[in-house]
Length: 338
Ligand SMILES: NC(=O)c1ccc[n+]([C@@H]2O[C@H](COP(=O)([O-])OP(=O)(O)OC[C@H]3O[C@@H](n4cnc5c(N)ncnc54)[C@H](OP(=O)(O)O)[C@@H]3O)[C@@H](O)[C@H]2O)c1
Image 1 (cartoon, rainbow, N blue to C red):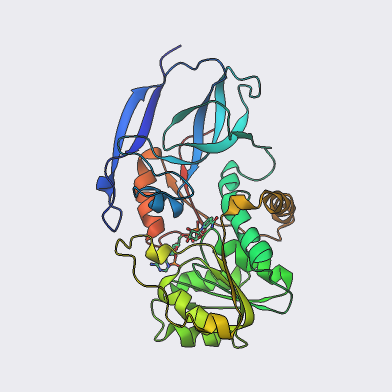
Image 2 (cartoon, rainbow, N blue to C red):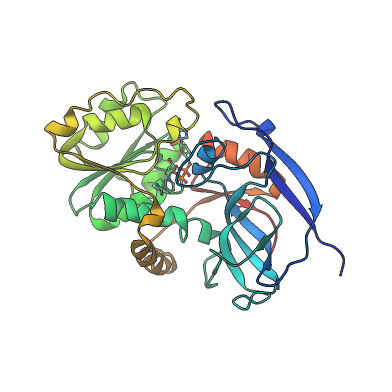
């Protein structure tokens, strides 16, 4: 058999503030032979996600930092093309944390077989994968949203936010959010379940805009952004409100660690609960969500959008675009045909 060639994207340097294409390097090398217990996966789709920005820094966190000169890691869906692991057979479709590369070798740990259904394979990195689970865990498990309550979501048209809107609407909540363009706001209202939304880039006052879209105040803030949007949400919280701290993308490039939001004393007066979470902390809720979402997708109750970049070489630009809000829905990189 002809030797397979692996194209990889490696970390060339750590970003200083914003991520640039210079932070990445492309490498090609022959695919190594697998040994006992290993599988060779042909990667089909990979996910680029905001948390990867944190992994580019050399800091201790809930996931280890990427290493300079080494291939970057990502959630991947791929096909097993060779197996010396009894749990996997050639032709199995699998998902797991693999590389920004065309082929990955795995010892099978953390690799899961994908039950191939009606949904396209890339959906297992989005609505049926980590971002969808995050929406459910944050809204139901952390925010404890109840029918009739008011939910506010930042980065509302993205992978997580587009699902939070639909879940909150199905629960019987009033749901509002913000995003960076009028087109995204229109889509949030027409497809993603939002009752109202505003463009935070053109808003004259973010606290006032939140008041307009959540006239009865906020009971659950699903916080994806941080910074001035989080501060404005804090000022609009109702008594006994819950803040599900999912992400703080506005701060990910911030090297100086700016002070937190003003108005923290309101947390006491309003008896707020603020809780950060990592989706993997709640495996039972994740399973519950995937089972429900598979049905809701098939019945058309859940809508889904992807922005797809074609080819592994496009992965660095796709990641930079994600951090700059160019994506609508989930940002995916298509690596190969199945
Ligand atoms: N806790 C967890 O387990 C967990 C899991 C998954 C994701 N997350 C977090 O959830 C958030 C959303 O993730 P995602 O995967 O769904 O990404 P996403 O929303 O699909 O993409 C990121 C979006 O963030 C917005 N954004 C970027 N920079 C911004 C800034 N400076 N100010 C305001 N908005 C900005 C952009 O949209 P617009 O500017 O157009 O709104 C961009 O499209 C991120 O903070 C991520 O880290 C957390």
